[in-house]
Length: 232
Image (cartoon, rainbow, N blue to C red; front, top):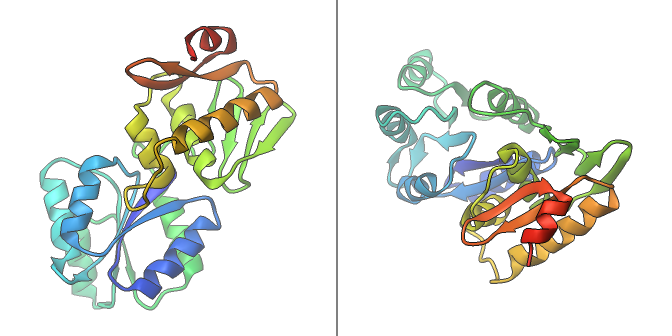
């Protein structure tokens, strides 16, 4: 999944981060409070969390401590206006993976986010490949051999989830969360429409795979002939 979580209550700062990361193919779910973020983290397995320290309902560092105490090792990048050495040390010792004091450049934020997302085992390749299909989030394209096709933002997140599942079934709710997050309302047939478009795009690049509807379970990338037997 190339969708991360941002815990930041300053609307303008959050908007700048969303724009900067979106430019390199990383979608962002924004949370303004620790309580809201904790609820979201329980529903979506984000590959990376970016957290501010000063929040309306507490210190973001306390959330990191809670996650680590529960054995959740998701990489965490802390954002803070505190740049004293002891604050950075406290953050790292509490379980944060990196610490970025404000003010910072968006270029540096993007670089640090991408560096953390490359760390094993939390993130697979930023451009995953499965059975001849390669997804390139930064270019916004899906490749199969010498053929390629552009993907819209939601389509990109769906293909990233399916390709990384490597033929295993992905639940419908997980695909909706990957494509649109938890904060955006999703129309009942939005996923069906997006999957229909992706099936056509897979055919357009002569992929041997298709998106199969595994009734009662979810969706998976399968051999086109087998998928054709399972799809409605």
